[in-house]
Length: 485
Image 1 (cartoon, helix red, strand yellow):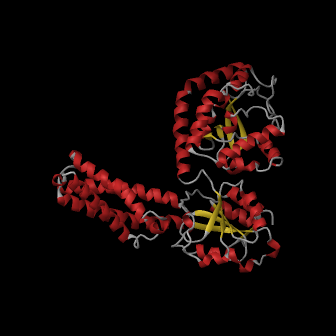
Image 2: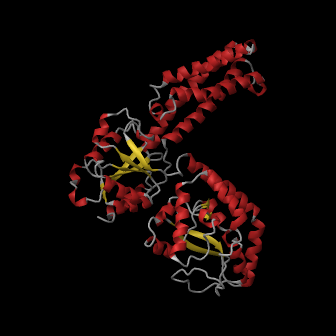
Image 3: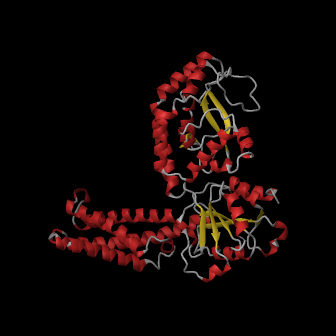
């Protein structure tokens, strides 16, 4: 079974709506931020109720509020109230929230006495501040939990999980994940296994959707957040082969423990899988808060650069139009994130042909198709400027692997092992390969392999600091390059 059936394709279309999957790390940070806001609100509310307008709050009370929310941040983590299990049990964690509040306010009182400033505070304000803090935080936990369950059931924040393996291990794992209140963020989309002929689908507790190739196809049609390989651990060679095939997909890959592992429920396990013993073998650097940081980086910087270069846009548009007939912008289909097609924008640098070329030809030195203006903008990389709109609209990123033409992508993917690993992030205007001099014509396979190696390295080692490094390097080496023509 190499391809998805028509029914499965239709199911993908119906269920492929927009979602915002949450991880335990994001939830912990989100509830921590909410608690901070609530503590500040409680302090100001208590001041308004007891002492007067919070617009004229005294500095010593501001210090107390700051001390409380900064102390609660550390005490709360020590008390474990931001762990995933605590977030998913708001009633059971009330005593820990109360204990964290008591310890935090006792620390404030101890500091006030040691500095001889306790008489400066209204005791009624302190008691009111404590009560409002506790009430606000507990209420927010309960409301947040109810809202989270609702959104998870609507598949708006749940994580799509694919399971590789169709044996007892997979069925046991599905039983564990089927407890909706315990694991509400997990949505098992189906089972995949290469040994379809040996599988009795009537015994499976989830839909069987095909082999590993079908899993790759499924992941590219409908985003999969986590892939769990649920095979016996003695099948180590088979697991290693499967993990290697899954490395190119933009998903976290986990190995679940053999059946004996379920006898030790207290064994710590990663993230949103609760007490299920599991090992993460492939991480996705661009996940959790990294997604938000990357999104903010792209939106803010692309908007600023569009404004900064707007005079250049106008001048180049006029020069292109005056030199030769045809559109100002050149549009072409490229493969982007998760190997999905998108339309890339460039300033047109070649003479416009009435009939588009069926096969993409890479530009060469002294290429007769390139105009005089085109030669200048290609050498200075100014032809790439319209891609700032791709970044702002979300199909590209400022930093990432350069997108290749569709036919080049198909050609090199069959020649270079691990080629699709470069599609684990959005394509970029500049990238690690480009600042290392690997740009321009790739007339040999060795050149393309070197470029792909650098692209995959970037995908597997992404960080916001790495992006900043590449952007700085681009400013010095990326605009003018002897290999760009």
